[in-house]
Image (cartoon, rainbow, N blue to C red; front, side, top):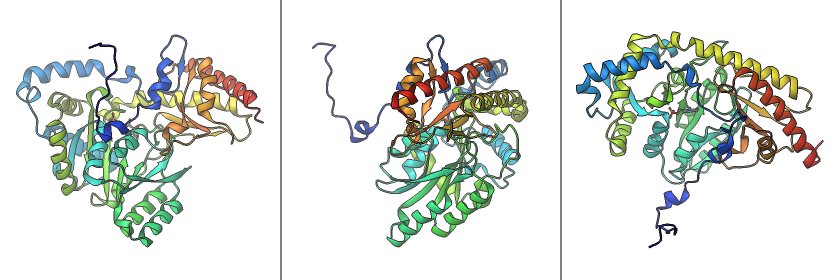
Length: 415
Ligand SMILES: *Cc1c(COP(=O)(O)O)cnc(C)c1O
C-alpha cells in the first residue's frame, strides 16, 4: 500500500455535505509579515486577563481538584450557574432564571449545534438573516432545514418580510414546521447592526401569534461602547418563547470555551440529554475557573479597558472609511455602537469576492459578504473587524483597500 495514495471512504451523507469554511481559505495569507487583516473575528489576546486566570487556575487545581479534575454533571458547574444567573440579572435585568433554566455548553457553537439537534428535522423551516452569522448557519445546516432568509435593515430584520413568510407558511398549512427564528440581537456578526426595541417587540409578538421560538444569540451585548443597552428579546417573550445564548468568548476569552443557554426547563432537559451523548459533560476545570473568576472579579469592570480600546479602534476605522471612501457614491457602512465589526457596502455592481484578489495583492484582508449569505450569492458588502490591527495599521489598511477598490473598478470598467 502506498501512503501517498488517496483512499476513497464511504462517508456519511452529512460528512459529504460539510464544506471547508471559505473564511479559512481566504485568510490563509492574512498572517504573513506586512499583511493587514480586517478579517479576523477574534478578540485581542492582550485583553485576556492572563495573570488573574493563571493564579486562579493554580488555586482551583490544587484546592478543588476533586471537582476540577473529575467528570462534571452534564448541566454544568452549579457554582458557575449561580454566577451566571447573577450576571444575567445585572446585565439584562431579567429575573426568575432558575438553575434548571441554564445549561453550560462548550461555547455558543455547541449550543447552536444542540439546538439544531433538538428542534430541527429535515425540511423544517428556520428564519435567518441576510447577512447571517456563519457558525449558526453551519450548525443548523447539519440538520438539513429550509432557510427563510430575511433582509437586514439598519435597525434589524425586515419585519414585513418575516410576516410575509409567516403568512405563506400559515396559508399552506406548514407553519408548524417553522421551528425558530435566529437573531444576533446586538452588534450582529457580521453587520454590526443592533435590532431596535420596536423590532424586538414585533418579533416576539409574531412568535406568539404564529407559535415559534426565537433563538437570541448575544455574544456582544456587553461590549457596548456608547448608547443605551436594549432589553433582550427574552425580557419580552420569557423562556417559553425565547432561548437566549451567551458566551464568555468575547468578554473573557474564547479559549475556555464557556457558553450559556437560558431556556425553558423542558428545553434544557432535552438539550442535556442530547449533550450527554455528545460529550458526557463540559470541562470541569474551565467551568470552575470561570466561576471563581466571576466570584473574585467584577467582569463588567474588567472589560472596560477592552471596550475603550475597541471603541477607539472603531473610531479610527470609521474616520478612515470616511476619508478614503467618503467620495465613493453609493458606498456606505454601518456605525456600530459596540462589538467588533463594521459592515461596508460598495456601490451596486461591485463584488467583494472578486475584489478580494486585488486586496490580497496589496496585503489587506477582509471577509467578502458572500460568506455570510445563507445561499452563497455574490455580495457588494464586506465584514471589516477593527479589533486586531494596531491603530496606524487600520488607517493604512483602509487606504490600501481604497487602492484595491480603484484597481478593481478599473479592471471591471465600473463607474
Ligand atoms: C463569536 C460568536 C459566537 C461565540 O462562539 P463561541 O462558540 O462561544 O466561541 C456565537 N455567536 C456569534 C454571533 C458570534 O459572533
